[in-house]
Length: 254
Image (cartoon, rainbow, N blue to C red):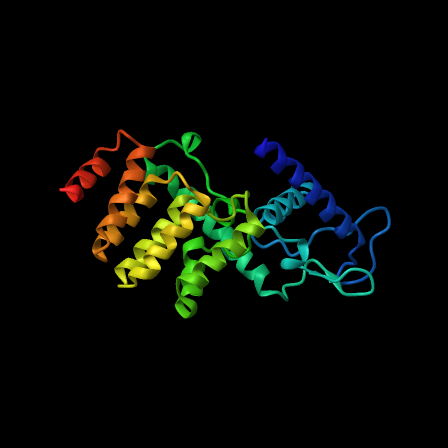
């Protein structure tokens, strides 16, 4: 279903792009009679690429980054300046650089993974961007917020992005994100923040055995032995075959 949705989105974006191109006037004058102006200023794509090939490629870019054509192109609509070939925007220069980078990676991938070219999974814009222009990790976004506001700010940022992007694949809202934030806070000596991340994780992943085990570890370090035992008992209840949690629980009870 996701592949079908992606394909439909790509077709819609292509249609939008074609329409925009048909309306946009070329830099040197009016639109040619009998059809849209030719595509010019191709620097990375082959200069003999057909209009259809270019539009399909552009549609894939917009879908992968979750943007519209005017993210890279000068496209102001009716009454404004519409010059798709212009190089005014830094994002267009960056896009060309990324195209070259992706090309280089895909050239080196077969040797790097020890597979033939046909058996190697190629990378593309969506590999990293996943529908957002700036592909930051959720943990990095939370860390930036927490730098000035502590765990409360980091958790608030997580909730803000989750409300906006879930259940899409732009960011990782799985149990690992809060676990990583807890580990970072604990390493930095911010024990209370580490515990806050784990407790927040249970709101979204109430059956996370790793979260309960982490809570037990922190509570035990803080001298809350009863709290640590309770957390480990919950972990064992959720996963009776977890030998590590059972061993830790037995050790604490002794």
